[in-house]
Image 1: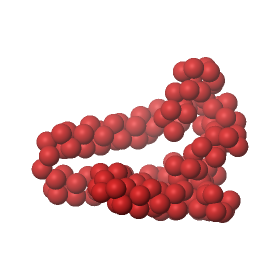
Image 2 (image 1 turned 120 degrees about the vertical axis):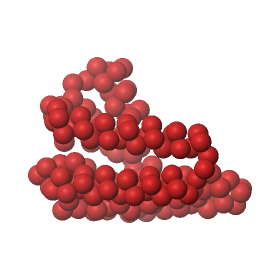
Image 3 (image 1 turned 90 degrees about the vertical axis):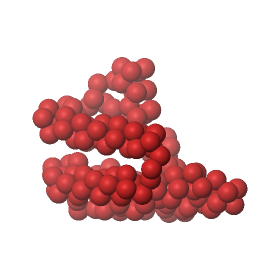
Length: 159
């Protein structure tokens, strides 16, 4: 998603409304996003990583799968095809993680709480200093992103 936004904003110079109301929903971009949000593809990648004894990659793909399971319940208008390429089905949850028209405050609060619990668990279960530094930096960026949305609101034209 970050690469998509950097390309649309930084390279193409599109305004926010064109990025989030048009470019994001183009079929090619949706296919691209859905590859990385496909639970079957992520589980297959985790299985391959396990077969090659790459516990780091296995954990990455399994955590991405867990992310997608939560996504099922936190996306409304911008739902992904979580069973791509097997199904074109998109579950439009009644709750959004960001959209105030669909309980965005509730969704965002749930997401922030889940990230907090996961962060505490990771901190307590790992002693690697660099992993902990990465965890703190990631958590701070995550909270800063939500804080900036709370203070400044969504960019004009955001879905």
